[in-house]
Length: 260
Image 1 (cartoon, rainbow, N blue to C red):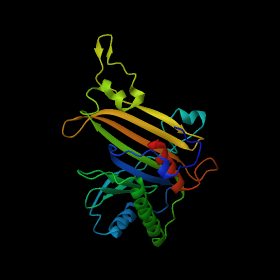
Image 2: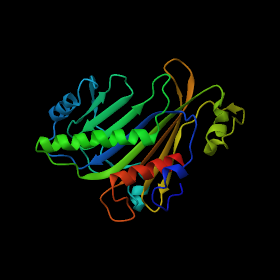
Image 3: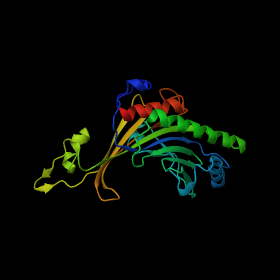
Image 4: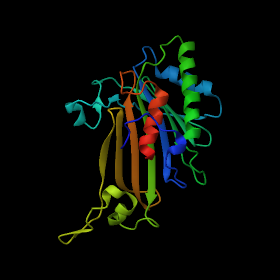
């Protein structure tokens, strides 16, 4: 991806009238907060009020770091350390099931989730929501006499689902939708192509972060086949240039890389 510059103004980015995005996730990773337990996360959930009625536990997301050393380039995403203890993540959903807050002792994520007949509200609307609830989380930590987050990574993900039908009928048509797959042969020595999955990784220059594009042939819950395109951009915080100097700038750069 071309990104030798800081984030571009929003009005200079491509605008898609009807994007197939079904979920966006804005997140921040930070150093583990000493003393923060699942009980604290539950208390924060209750403080959000009745508009957030549902919560479930899930395994914690691994601590990750994009590295630009020779060794780091050959790993999909480096673990910062090996962890043996059982850790949990709290997922809290709103009543309409269109928003989710994900919390653990070193992460805060905010999801927009598509529901039937709802259009994607766009980054410019979801981003202020992330800022609002992340600020509330920081205030909660202060009120509980816990450490405020020492941020070390920004992350943003767009999940796209493109159903079989109008845009593609077989896997061989994927190149019409996703240009990097345009060279896949439909037939190879009498063998017909049935499925393909993979990942493309791009450095966001100059060593600001990485953009990872995962494509997958899948089947939806009701039977239709799907082309799944998951685009994730992430990069470090709290390091010298050329890294972003703030979470806000990092998220904007990640959004720019994905949209471009």
